[in-house]
Image 1 (cartoon, rainbow, N blue to C red):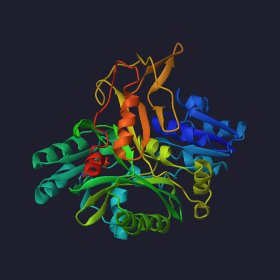
Image 2 (cartoon, helix red, strand yellow):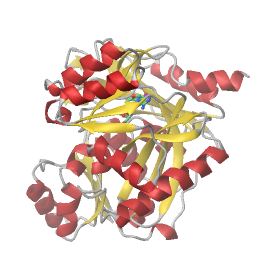
Image 3 (cartoon, helix red, strand yellow):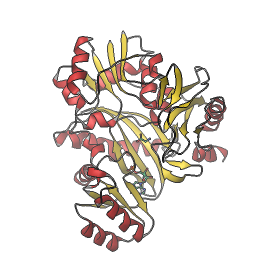
Image 4 (cartoon, rainbow, N blue to C red):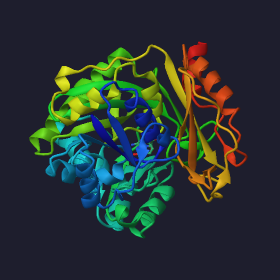
Length: 423
Ligand code: AMP
Ligand code: GLY
Protein backbone atom coordinates (compact mmCIF):
# COMPACT_ATOMS: atom_id res chain seq x y z
CA UNK A 1 0.00 0.00 0.00
CA UNK A 2 1.21 3.53 -0.82
CA UNK A 3 0.33 5.96 1.94
CA UNK A 4 0.38 9.75 2.21
CA UNK A 5 0.43 11.16 5.73
CA UNK A 6 -0.69 14.77 6.25
CA UNK A 7 0.83 16.79 9.09
CA UNK A 8 4.10 17.82 10.72
CA UNK A 9 3.81 17.41 14.49
CA UNK A 10 4.89 14.90 17.11
CA UNK A 11 1.58 13.13 16.58
CA UNK A 12 2.39 12.61 12.91
CA UNK A 13 5.92 11.47 13.72
CA UNK A 14 4.46 8.78 15.98
CA UNK A 15 1.98 7.77 13.26
CA UNK A 16 4.73 7.66 10.62
CA UNK A 17 6.97 5.57 12.90
CA UNK A 18 4.16 3.08 13.47
CA UNK A 19 2.87 2.98 9.87
CA UNK A 20 6.45 2.43 8.65
CA UNK A 21 6.55 -0.83 10.65
CA UNK A 22 3.62 -2.28 8.69
CA UNK A 23 4.37 -5.22 6.38
CA UNK A 24 1.53 -3.92 4.17
CA UNK A 25 3.39 -0.69 3.42
CA UNK A 26 5.06 -0.16 0.03
CA UNK A 27 5.82 3.55 0.28
CA UNK A 28 5.17 6.30 2.80
CA UNK A 29 5.05 10.00 1.90
CA UNK A 30 4.44 12.89 4.29
CA UNK A 31 3.30 16.45 3.61
CA UNK A 32 4.86 18.54 4.95
CA UNK A 33 6.42 16.26 7.59
CA UNK A 34 9.42 17.17 9.76
CA UNK A 35 13.02 15.93 10.17
CA UNK A 36 11.93 13.09 12.48
CA UNK A 37 9.23 11.95 10.06
CA UNK A 38 11.88 12.00 7.32
CA UNK A 39 13.41 8.89 8.98
CA UNK A 40 10.32 6.91 7.96
CA UNK A 41 8.78 8.75 5.00
CA UNK A 42 9.66 10.77 1.95
CA UNK A 43 8.79 14.41 2.63
CA UNK A 44 6.80 15.87 -0.23
CA UNK A 45 5.76 19.26 -1.49
CA UNK A 46 2.04 19.71 -2.03
CA UNK A 47 0.61 22.50 0.10
CA UNK A 48 -1.94 20.85 2.37
CA UNK A 49 -4.24 23.88 2.11
CA UNK A 50 -4.42 23.40 -1.66
CA UNK A 51 -6.71 20.39 -1.88
CA UNK A 52 -6.41 20.16 -5.67
CA UNK A 53 -2.61 19.96 -5.34
CA UNK A 54 -2.87 17.18 -2.74
CA UNK A 55 -5.25 15.22 -5.00
CA UNK A 56 -3.00 15.74 -8.04
CA UNK A 57 0.00 14.48 -6.05
CA UNK A 58 -1.93 11.46 -4.78
CA UNK A 59 -2.97 10.55 -8.34
CA UNK A 60 0.52 11.05 -9.73
CA UNK A 61 2.06 8.73 -7.13
CA UNK A 62 -0.87 6.27 -7.20
CA UNK A 63 -1.44 6.77 -3.46
CA UNK A 64 -3.84 4.14 -2.07
CA UNK A 65 -4.56 5.74 1.25
CA UNK A 66 -4.27 9.19 2.83
CA UNK A 67 -4.03 9.59 6.62
CA UNK A 68 -4.84 13.07 7.93
CA UNK A 69 -3.29 13.91 11.32
CA UNK A 70 -4.30 17.46 12.37
CA UNK A 71 -7.71 19.06 12.77
CA UNK A 72 -7.28 22.09 10.50
CA UNK A 73 -7.32 20.16 7.19
CA UNK A 74 -10.26 18.08 8.44
CA UNK A 75 -12.31 21.14 9.33
CA UNK A 76 -11.33 22.55 5.91
CA UNK A 77 -12.85 19.48 4.21
CA UNK A 78 -9.69 17.79 2.89
CA UNK A 79 -11.08 14.32 3.65
CA UNK A 80 -14.29 15.09 1.68
CA UNK A 81 -12.32 16.32 -1.32
CA UNK A 82 -9.97 13.31 -1.33
CA UNK A 83 -12.85 10.85 -1.03
CA UNK A 84 -14.74 12.67 -3.81
CA UNK A 85 -11.63 12.09 -5.95
CA UNK A 86 -11.85 8.36 -5.19
CA UNK A 87 -8.96 8.20 -2.71
CA UNK A 88 -9.44 6.23 0.51
CA UNK A 89 -8.88 8.64 3.39
CA UNK A 90 -8.57 8.32 7.15
CA UNK A 91 -10.29 11.31 8.74
CA UNK A 92 -13.81 12.64 9.18
CA UNK A 93 -15.81 14.78 6.75
CA UNK A 94 -16.06 18.50 7.29
CA UNK A 95 -19.62 18.00 8.56
CA UNK A 96 -18.53 15.36 11.10
CA UNK A 97 -15.48 17.43 12.11
CA UNK A 98 -17.93 19.94 13.62
CA UNK A 99 -17.74 17.68 16.68
CA UNK A 100 -14.48 19.52 17.31
CA UNK A 101 -14.99 22.60 15.15
CA UNK A 102 -18.06 23.84 17.02
CA UNK A 103 -18.55 23.39 20.75
CA UNK A 104 -22.20 24.43 20.33
CA UNK A 105 -22.75 21.70 17.72
CA UNK A 106 -21.47 19.06 20.14
CA UNK A 107 -23.47 20.40 23.08
CA UNK A 108 -26.66 20.33 20.96
CA UNK A 109 -25.87 16.72 19.95
CA UNK A 110 -25.48 15.84 23.64
CA UNK A 111 -28.82 17.47 24.42
CA UNK A 112 -30.58 15.62 21.57
CA UNK A 113 -29.22 12.19 22.47
CA UNK A 114 -29.06 12.46 26.26
CA UNK A 115 -25.26 12.33 26.50
CA UNK A 116 -24.03 13.42 29.94
CA UNK A 117 -22.31 16.84 29.81
CA UNK A 118 -22.43 20.14 31.74
CA UNK A 119 -25.62 22.23 31.39
CA UNK A 120 -25.06 25.01 28.86
CA UNK A 121 -26.41 27.78 26.65
CA UNK A 122 -25.17 29.24 23.36
CA UNK A 123 -24.91 33.01 22.80
CA UNK A 124 -24.28 35.30 19.83
CA UNK A 125 -23.88 38.50 21.87
CA UNK A 126 -22.39 39.51 25.20
CA UNK A 127 -25.32 40.87 27.23
CA UNK A 128 -27.52 37.74 27.32
CA UNK A 129 -24.40 35.63 28.02
CA UNK A 130 -23.54 37.88 30.96
CA UNK A 131 -27.11 37.71 32.28
CA UNK A 132 -26.88 33.91 32.16
CA UNK A 133 -23.53 33.96 34.02
CA UNK A 134 -24.99 36.28 36.69
CA UNK A 135 -27.95 33.94 37.10
CA UNK A 136 -25.77 30.79 37.30
CA UNK A 137 -22.88 32.20 39.39
CA UNK A 138 -19.24 31.01 39.44
CA UNK A 139 -17.37 28.74 38.96
CA UNK A 140 -18.50 28.60 35.35
CA UNK A 141 -16.85 27.91 32.00
CA UNK A 142 -16.77 30.27 29.00
CA UNK A 143 -15.89 28.79 25.60
CA UNK A 144 -15.38 30.34 22.19
CA UNK A 145 -17.50 28.19 19.87
CA UNK A 146 -14.90 27.56 17.16
CA UNK A 147 -11.31 26.30 16.89
CA UNK A 148 -9.04 28.55 18.95
CA UNK A 149 -5.86 26.45 19.09
CA UNK A 150 -6.80 25.20 22.55
CA UNK A 151 -6.95 28.73 23.95
CA UNK A 152 -10.67 29.54 23.69
CA UNK A 153 -11.70 28.11 27.07
CA UNK A 154 -11.81 30.04 30.35
CA UNK A 155 -12.57 28.11 33.50
CA UNK A 156 -13.75 31.12 35.54
CA UNK A 157 -13.55 30.75 39.30
CA UNK A 158 -15.24 34.15 39.80
CA UNK A 159 -18.13 35.92 38.10
CA UNK A 160 -15.85 38.86 37.18
CA UNK A 161 -13.46 36.49 35.36
CA UNK A 162 -16.39 34.97 33.47
CA UNK A 163 -17.75 38.38 32.41
CA UNK A 164 -14.29 39.45 31.24
CA UNK A 165 -13.90 36.22 29.24
CA UNK A 166 -17.23 36.89 27.51
CA UNK A 167 -16.02 40.38 26.54
CA UNK A 168 -12.72 38.92 25.27
CA UNK A 169 -14.55 36.47 23.01
CA UNK A 170 -16.91 39.03 21.53
CA UNK A 171 -14.09 41.61 21.23
CA UNK A 172 -12.33 39.23 18.88
CA UNK A 173 -9.61 37.67 21.08
CA UNK A 174 -10.18 34.39 19.21
CA UNK A 175 -11.19 35.85 15.86
CA UNK A 176 -14.13 34.23 14.13
CA UNK A 177 -13.99 31.32 16.63
CA UNK A 178 -15.37 33.69 19.28
CA UNK A 179 -18.33 35.01 17.29
CA UNK A 180 -20.44 32.58 19.26
CA UNK A 181 -19.93 31.66 22.90
CA UNK A 182 -20.95 28.60 24.91
CA UNK A 183 -21.41 29.10 28.63
CA UNK A 184 -21.19 25.81 30.47
CA UNK A 185 -21.50 24.47 33.99
CA UNK A 186 -18.22 23.78 35.78
CA UNK A 187 -17.57 20.05 36.15
CA UNK A 188 -15.50 18.84 39.08
CA UNK A 189 -13.42 15.67 38.91
CA UNK A 190 -10.41 14.05 37.26
CA UNK A 191 -9.92 14.39 33.52
CA UNK A 192 -9.16 11.60 31.07
CA UNK A 193 -9.10 11.23 27.31
CA UNK A 194 -10.83 8.27 25.74
CA UNK A 195 -9.75 7.37 22.19
CA UNK A 196 -12.02 5.59 19.74
CA UNK A 197 -12.20 4.71 16.09
CA UNK A 198 -15.44 4.78 14.13
CA UNK A 199 -16.27 3.89 10.55
CA UNK A 200 -19.67 5.56 10.83
CA UNK A 201 -21.42 2.48 12.22
CA UNK A 202 -19.05 0.58 14.48
CA UNK A 203 -17.02 2.06 17.34
CA UNK A 204 -13.74 0.49 18.41
CA UNK A 205 -12.39 1.68 21.74
CA UNK A 206 -8.63 2.22 21.55
CA UNK A 207 -7.08 3.31 24.83
CA UNK A 208 -7.18 5.99 27.48
CA UNK A 209 -4.65 8.70 28.22
CA UNK A 210 -4.16 11.73 30.38
CA UNK A 211 -2.79 15.00 29.07
CA UNK A 212 -1.15 17.84 31.05
CA UNK A 213 -2.43 21.11 29.60
CA UNK A 214 -0.84 23.66 31.95
CA UNK A 215 2.70 24.75 31.23
CA UNK A 216 4.02 24.52 34.81
CA UNK A 217 4.67 21.82 37.40
CA UNK A 218 1.72 21.13 39.66
CA UNK A 219 -0.66 22.09 36.82
CA UNK A 220 0.05 25.80 37.10
CA UNK A 221 0.42 28.61 34.57
CA UNK A 222 -1.30 29.10 31.22
CA UNK A 223 -2.82 26.36 29.07
CA UNK A 224 -0.76 24.84 26.27
CA UNK A 225 -1.37 22.27 23.55
CA UNK A 226 -0.21 19.65 26.08
CA UNK A 227 3.09 19.30 27.97
CA UNK A 228 3.07 15.54 28.38
CA UNK A 229 0.79 12.53 28.57
CA UNK A 230 0.59 8.97 29.72
CA UNK A 231 -1.50 5.92 28.94
CA UNK A 232 -3.49 4.17 30.30
CA UNK A 233 -5.28 6.65 32.59
CA UNK A 234 -5.94 4.77 35.85
CA UNK A 235 -9.07 6.81 36.57
CA UNK A 236 -10.62 4.96 33.60
CA UNK A 237 -11.43 1.71 35.34
CA UNK A 238 -13.18 -1.08 33.43
CA UNK A 239 -16.53 0.16 34.76
CA UNK A 240 -15.83 3.73 33.64
CA UNK A 241 -14.77 2.51 30.18
CA UNK A 242 -17.96 0.48 29.87
CA UNK A 243 -20.12 3.40 30.99
CA UNK A 244 -18.31 5.80 28.64
CA UNK A 245 -18.93 3.49 25.67
CA UNK A 246 -22.60 3.05 26.52
CA UNK A 247 -23.51 6.53 27.75
CA UNK A 248 -21.28 8.73 25.58
CA UNK A 249 -19.55 7.03 22.61
CA UNK A 250 -22.32 4.82 21.23
CA UNK A 251 -25.04 7.52 21.34
CA UNK A 252 -22.59 9.90 19.64
CA UNK A 253 -21.86 7.49 16.76
CA UNK A 254 -25.51 6.57 16.24
CA UNK A 255 -26.62 10.20 16.71
CA UNK A 256 -24.13 11.51 14.16
CA UNK A 257 -25.30 8.85 11.65
CA UNK A 258 -28.97 9.64 12.34
CA UNK A 259 -28.31 13.34 11.79
CA UNK A 260 -26.72 12.60 8.41
CA UNK A 261 -23.11 13.20 9.53
CA UNK A 262 -21.69 9.71 10.01
CA UNK A 263 -18.32 9.95 11.73
CA UNK A 264 -15.37 8.14 10.15
CA UNK A 265 -11.94 8.40 11.74
CA UNK A 266 -10.45 8.65 15.20
CA UNK A 267 -11.92 10.83 17.88
CA UNK A 268 -11.34 11.32 21.52
CA UNK A 269 -13.66 12.33 24.24
CA UNK A 270 -12.27 14.73 26.80
CA UNK A 271 -14.00 13.39 29.89
CA UNK A 272 -14.47 14.63 33.40
CA UNK A 273 -14.95 11.75 35.78
CA UNK A 274 -17.32 13.38 38.25
CA UNK A 275 -19.10 11.96 41.28
CA UNK A 276 -21.94 11.02 38.87
CA UNK A 277 -19.64 9.22 36.43
CA UNK A 278 -18.15 10.17 33.06
CA UNK A 279 -19.30 13.47 31.56
CA UNK A 280 -18.26 14.86 28.19
CA UNK A 281 -16.16 18.03 28.16
CA UNK A 282 -15.43 18.04 24.46
CA UNK A 283 -14.67 15.96 21.40
CA UNK A 284 -11.61 16.09 19.18
CA UNK A 285 -11.78 14.52 15.75
CA UNK A 286 -8.17 13.34 15.49
CA UNK A 287 -5.49 11.79 17.67
CA UNK A 288 -4.40 14.00 20.56
CA UNK A 289 -0.93 15.49 20.46
CA UNK A 290 1.03 14.35 22.55
CA UNK A 291 -1.44 11.56 23.52
CA UNK A 292 -0.93 9.84 20.16
CA UNK A 293 2.74 9.33 20.97
CA UNK A 294 1.95 7.23 24.05
CA UNK A 295 -0.81 5.31 22.26
CA UNK A 296 1.53 4.39 19.41
CA UNK A 297 4.20 3.20 21.90
CA UNK A 298 1.59 0.92 23.49
CA UNK A 299 -0.10 -0.39 20.33
CA UNK A 300 0.99 -3.95 19.56
CA UNK A 301 -1.13 -4.40 16.43
CA UNK A 302 -0.23 -3.22 12.96
CA UNK A 303 -1.71 0.29 12.74
CA UNK A 304 -2.14 0.47 8.98
CA UNK A 305 -4.91 -2.15 8.50
CA UNK A 306 -6.77 -0.67 11.47
CA UNK A 307 -6.74 2.82 9.96
CA UNK A 308 -7.68 1.40 6.54
CA UNK A 309 -10.61 -0.57 7.99
CA UNK A 310 -11.81 2.61 9.69
CA UNK A 311 -11.70 4.50 6.41
CA UNK A 312 -13.39 1.78 4.38
CA UNK A 313 -16.29 0.78 6.65
CA UNK A 314 -14.88 -2.57 7.84
CA UNK A 315 -13.94 -1.71 11.40
CA UNK A 316 -15.99 -4.66 12.67
CA UNK A 317 -13.33 -6.97 11.18
CA UNK A 318 -10.29 -5.66 13.07
CA UNK A 319 -9.16 -5.37 16.64
CA UNK A 320 -6.42 -3.44 18.41
CA UNK A 321 -4.04 -5.14 20.84
CA UNK A 322 -2.17 -3.16 23.47
CA UNK A 323 0.94 -3.72 25.52
CA UNK A 324 0.25 -4.04 29.24
CA UNK A 325 3.01 -1.55 29.98
CA UNK A 326 2.34 2.12 30.57
CA UNK A 327 3.78 4.74 28.24
CA UNK A 328 4.64 8.30 29.16
CA UNK A 329 5.78 11.24 27.04
CA UNK A 330 7.46 14.45 28.17
CA UNK A 331 7.23 17.47 25.88
CA UNK A 332 10.39 19.52 25.51
CA UNK A 333 9.33 23.05 24.59
CA UNK A 334 11.13 26.28 23.68
CA UNK A 335 11.74 28.54 26.71
CA UNK A 336 8.93 31.09 26.78
CA UNK A 337 6.24 28.78 25.34
CA UNK A 338 3.22 29.18 25.31
CA UNK A 339 4.24 32.85 25.06
CA UNK A 340 6.92 34.23 22.74
CA UNK A 341 10.08 32.16 22.24
CA UNK A 342 13.27 32.24 20.17
CA UNK A 343 13.24 30.33 16.90
CA UNK A 344 16.00 28.37 15.19
CA UNK A 345 17.82 27.49 18.42
CA UNK A 346 20.25 24.59 17.87
CA UNK A 347 19.53 21.05 19.07
CA UNK A 348 22.95 19.48 19.52
CA UNK A 349 22.00 15.89 20.35
CA UNK A 350 19.03 13.55 20.43
CA UNK A 351 19.63 10.12 22.01
CA UNK A 352 19.03 6.97 19.94
CA UNK A 353 15.69 5.21 20.05
CA UNK A 354 15.24 1.72 21.49
CA UNK A 355 12.30 -0.65 21.48
CA UNK A 356 11.19 0.89 24.78
CA UNK A 357 11.85 4.57 24.20
CA UNK A 358 11.85 7.12 21.41
CA UNK A 359 12.18 10.87 20.93
CA UNK A 360 9.55 12.12 18.50
CA UNK A 361 10.02 15.37 16.63
CA UNK A 362 7.40 18.12 16.64
CA UNK A 363 8.61 21.67 15.93
CA UNK A 364 12.02 20.91 14.46
CA UNK A 365 13.64 21.78 11.14
CA UNK A 366 16.94 21.37 9.37
CA UNK A 367 18.80 24.65 8.70
CA UNK A 368 22.05 24.19 6.78
CA UNK A 369 21.97 20.51 7.74
CA UNK A 370 21.77 21.31 11.45
CA UNK A 371 18.77 20.44 13.56
CA UNK A 372 17.01 23.48 15.07
CA UNK A 373 13.89 24.13 17.12
CA UNK A 374 11.30 26.11 15.19
CA UNK A 375 8.14 25.59 17.21
CA UNK A 376 6.81 25.94 20.74
CA UNK A 377 6.55 22.22 21.41
CA UNK A 378 9.67 20.70 19.89
CA UNK A 379 10.43 17.14 21.04
CA UNK A 380 8.35 14.40 22.71
CA UNK A 381 10.48 12.07 24.80
CA UNK A 382 8.45 8.88 25.08
CA UNK A 383 9.12 5.70 27.04
CA UNK A 384 7.47 2.50 28.24
CA UNK A 385 7.58 1.07 31.76
CA UNK A 386 5.87 -1.61 33.82
CA UNK A 387 4.15 1.20 35.72
CA UNK A 388 3.64 4.90 35.05
CA UNK A 389 6.29 5.54 37.71
CA UNK A 390 8.78 3.44 35.75
CA UNK A 391 7.82 4.93 32.38
CA UNK A 392 8.25 8.38 33.94
CA UNK A 393 11.75 7.52 35.20
CA UNK A 394 12.74 6.17 31.76
CA UNK A 395 11.34 9.20 29.92
CA UNK A 396 13.10 11.74 32.15
CA UNK A 397 16.38 9.82 31.99
CA UNK A 398 16.16 10.04 28.20
CA UNK A 399 15.01 13.70 28.25
CA UNK A 400 18.07 14.57 30.33
CA UNK A 401 20.27 13.23 27.53
CA UNK A 402 18.80 15.61 24.94
CA UNK A 403 21.21 18.48 24.34
CA UNK A 404 19.17 21.58 23.62
CA UNK A 405 19.95 24.69 25.62
CA UNK A 406 16.78 26.58 24.83
CA UNK A 407 14.50 23.70 25.85
CA UNK A 408 12.51 23.12 29.02
CA UNK A 409 10.00 20.56 30.25
CA UNK A 410 7.67 19.94 33.13
CA UNK A 411 9.29 17.62 35.69
CA UNK A 412 6.07 16.06 36.99
CA UNK A 413 4.34 14.48 34.00
CA UNK A 414 2.25 11.58 35.29
CA UNK A 415 2.05 12.88 38.86
CA UNK A 416 -1.55 11.78 39.43
CA UNK A 417 -0.84 8.20 38.35
CA UNK A 418 2.47 8.12 40.21
CA UNK A 419 0.66 9.23 43.39
CA UNK A 420 -1.92 6.46 42.91
CA UNK A 421 0.82 3.87 42.35
CA UNK A 422 2.44 4.86 45.66
CA UNK A 423 -0.71 3.98 47.58
P1 AMP B 1 -11.14 22.21 26.07
O1 AMP B 1 -10.38 23.15 25.17
O2 AMP B 1 -12.60 22.18 25.83
O3 AMP B 1 -10.45 20.88 26.22
O4 AMP B 1 -10.97 22.83 27.52
C1 AMP B 1 -9.70 23.04 28.06
C2 AMP B 1 -9.71 22.61 29.49
O5 AMP B 1 -10.64 23.38 30.23
C3 AMP B 1 -10.17 21.17 29.72
O6 AMP B 1 -9.15 20.25 29.53
C4 AMP B 1 -10.61 21.24 31.16
O7 AMP B 1 -9.49 21.18 32.02
C5 AMP B 1 -11.20 22.62 31.26
N1 AMP B 1 -12.66 22.56 31.10
C6 AMP B 1 -13.36 22.66 29.96
N2 AMP B 1 -14.69 22.56 30.20
C7 AMP B 1 -14.82 22.40 31.52
C8 AMP B 1 -15.94 22.25 32.40
N3 AMP B 1 -17.19 22.26 31.95
N4 AMP B 1 -15.69 22.10 33.72
C9 AMP B 1 -14.42 22.11 34.20
N5 AMP B 1 -13.34 22.26 33.43
C10 AMP B 1 -13.52 22.40 32.11
N1 GLY C 1 -3.22 17.38 23.73
C1 GLY C 1 -4.54 17.84 23.48
C2 GLY C 1 -4.98 17.80 22.10
O1 GLY C 1 -4.35 17.26 21.22
O2 GLY C 1 -6.05 18.32 21.87
